[in-house]
Length: 266
Ligand SMILES: NC(=O)c1ccc[n+]([C@@H]2O[C@H](COP(=O)([O-])OP(=O)(O)OC[C@H]3O[C@@H](n4cnc5c(N)ncnc54)[C@H](OP(=O)(O)O)[C@@H]3O)[C@@H](O)[C@H]2O)c1
Image 1 (cartoon, rainbow, N blue to C red):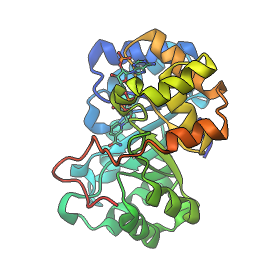
Image 2: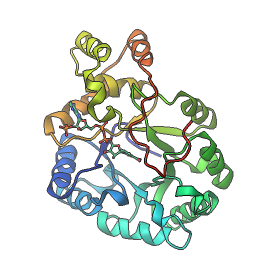
Image 3: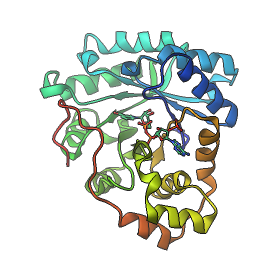
Image 4: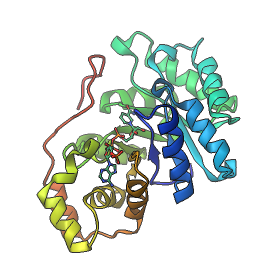
């Protein structure tokens, strides 16, 4: 999978704001856009992709299959609808957005349907999101680790998810950090601020660079062009081992996203 490690998130962005954020992002040089069926903005992302005139092969597009579409007889049709809205023939990555609430649809069924959708050409790669270790194990049992391109999970300095990272590393499964800025919460952290000052960087850049240094992809979002531009520069920020250790020490298991249908977390 040739996924750029720094991408652009689109959660919450609706209508013109979604179009503007993605258009600004593409103009600034983002080449990885993260959306989802439930965000209600695939059509806007599609419009921005179309308007930007960036060659299809140059931008990596991820969508996520919503929990209501996880059954074998619904998954492919829902992805076809996503492709129509996104105005693409194939997404680069299709993820199961959340494990089926209460296990209503067996995990094996969804994973095999997703694999079949990839084989039918609807997605170039497939993966999962919000999967704790136990469910990643089940997903591996269903389709094999080689067919799980990434596990996209909440991950930031205040929620470091070490057990999952260790397991994913051993299984050879890449991890993508969602909410890498803890929706802005880590930006006021004094330790991150001190590292940022040492490097003449922003707190956002430091948080993103810390994740990138661990080989984790990041998909921050922003409605502001200057923040989009600044975040993209995180890729060029090299933190020292000491800087990284200082941020490693900030873990406090603070999870921001845990809807009532969430799985049992690690
Ligand atoms: N798989 C899942 O279940 C799941 C769940 C949640 C999120 N996600 C994905 O992850 C993406 C990122 O998560 P997120 O958007 O919730 O949170 P985030 O990227 O951690 O934070 C976004 C917030 O930080 C602010 N911000 C961004 N860059 C900034 C900067 N340089 N300086 C100051 N403030 C900055 C933004 O405000 P401004 O607009 O003012 O810049 C916005 O309020 C989502 O968009 C979505 O694609 C996936």
